[in-house]
Image (cartoon, rainbow, N blue to C red):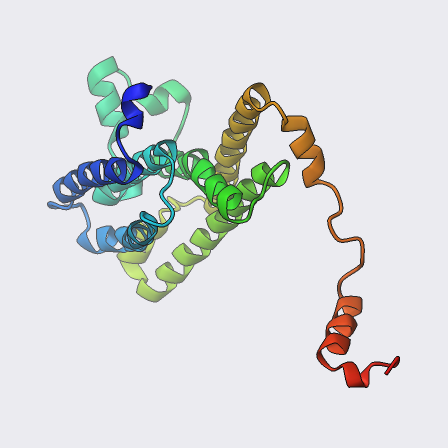
Length: 251
């Protein structure tokens, strides 16, 4: 592990970025559906802008950068073929002589389902880094909030897919939505992303329970009441009195 400490976080980020750009350029050549490829990569572009802008002031850990890289690399395969047409069964059959779907008992192309699961599994930890380092979300909240964020963003992505399908319609909308005739497709995608994030946080929590000397104390402290006074209308009245002391009943 000593060798990796000699590579700065920024340098490590640039190495992975270079590798991703190589893959991106290769898979950008003759995608199955150019319009769907462009639509699939819109959010990737937005995400990369965020990573570049944050790399100097908020470098992620090498673990987080690696998890992000793996997820985006797999996503690029889906965007090249369109998710519902990724030929993983053909690849599997050429090596093992039988299709993966036949082995597992699947009846549809589930590459999209796999990637939704990986969204939660691979990105929950980088999300946890943000919560822990910026919001100081330790203890219980350091595991619950990344799970909650993965679940909510998964829901937002399904809404984004629906909106894109409504706007573009036709074959492009259908290709991007990728339901393959399953009316519960969005629900299953969200459930798999949630399961992936839950598993990632379980592993992270288990590791911290083993390594972190004050794990129990931090967990307990995170659930303590920090502000005993109620908020809501009581807090509004307090702030109004603070803002306009002349209107206070005591004045």
